[in-house]
Amino acid sequence: MGKIAYEQASFKDFEHMPGLNMYETAQEFWNYVDDWESRGHWNYRQECVSGCKPVVDVIAKGKLYKDCVALVFNDYWGLTQHPKVKAAAIAAIEQYGVGAAASPAIGGHMTYHRLLEERIAKFFYRDSAMLYTTGYTANSATMQALLKMDAFAIVDMGVHASMHEGLLTTNKKTFPHNDMEALERILQQTQGKYINRMVIIDGVYSQQADIAPLDQIVKLCKQYGAYLAMDDAHGIGVIGETGRGVLELYNLYQEVDIITGVFSKTFGHLGGYVIASPELIRYLQFQSRQHIFSVTATPASACILKSIDLIDEEPFWKDRLWENINYLKKGLDTMGFDTGNTQSAIIPVMTGSPNLNAEICRLLLEAGVYANQIGYPAVPRKNARIRMSVMATHTREDMDNVLSAWEWIESKMKIAKKYGYQTQID
Ligand SMILES: Cc1ncc(COP(=O)(O)O)c(C=O)c1O
Image (cartoon, rainbow, N blue to C red; front, top):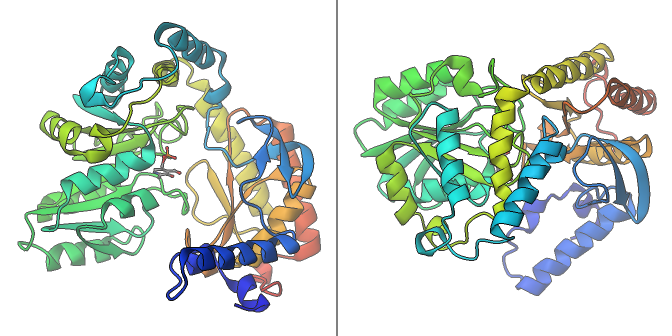
């Protein structure tokens, strides 16, 4: 590959390089990273010195950037730093030690796991839940265990990569994001041909930042006899009167066959959960390979019990979160940026160009704002955007600093909607 090609390339181009062995492929990738670094555009894996906080010190390109407003964390309520949640983790470590050291079927199922399974099921007014050690595995392993070669998955294009991984050994068709006519067409075309058909959606979409029309999807699934799975990783603590996400928004707690979610966002810790009928949960407990052959979550995860309590005990965090979301979005919209169709705590600024993204991220950091660049393959190239996650613990001053940074960038780069997407950097 020549220099120009590296500039235009994305991670995807290095996934499989036919004819190259693993060292040659890795060398090509190495050269690509070097090329982006040489322009100050490699904005990944920057070292955060402070932990997950609204304002952080971060080391980027060998330089320490102090007191940057962090818009990279999905810790929407700031619970990773909540004194009661931290105290609960410390108490659990004192009680149980620091590890579980066995998989759940053969010794690793501890009291705090049972309590957590019961609490998260109850949180959604359901009977049965089980834990996975990551949210990623909750999705991929569940789909892999339930949908075999004779099944058919009907998948919104916006769902998280973990769902797609679980569908590698079944049949699947994707439909354009939130396009109900396309979904219905696939349901019609596949009717009667598969014993298991599962529609797979997110509640809040992690890149589009919008919400699934769950009422319409439930109706279509019932009409055409398909099952429904929904991952609402980004909806909890953000959507619904009491923060129970998209299920609460539509009051459809009982209508989704498989509910998945994560403890790594609003709940402030790590791990994933699956909520389903007692029969399906028992089946997954012993048929899902990633569950039976992998160690259970560490005792610190007992702190999630406190996080779940706080969703009801301290609802003011959701109000503060929405004050920040609305303030930031309004400021960006007023300056003329394209913030897409966001309905959640994720605010994108559309740029339409991976290279422009990289330059904006570099400038944002210079201005004391730490945000993420999102490009292909997470979104199509033309939908590249800067992605900002807002936290309840950001102050008004933090939000004003972010808006000033964007104002400064706009004065240099002219990327507001009225100019169309600028591509001169490509
Ligand atoms: C929608 C969605 N589902 C699942 C995951 C995976 O969760 P975890 O990072 O907890 O493994 C993510 C992570 O970003 C996500 O955005």
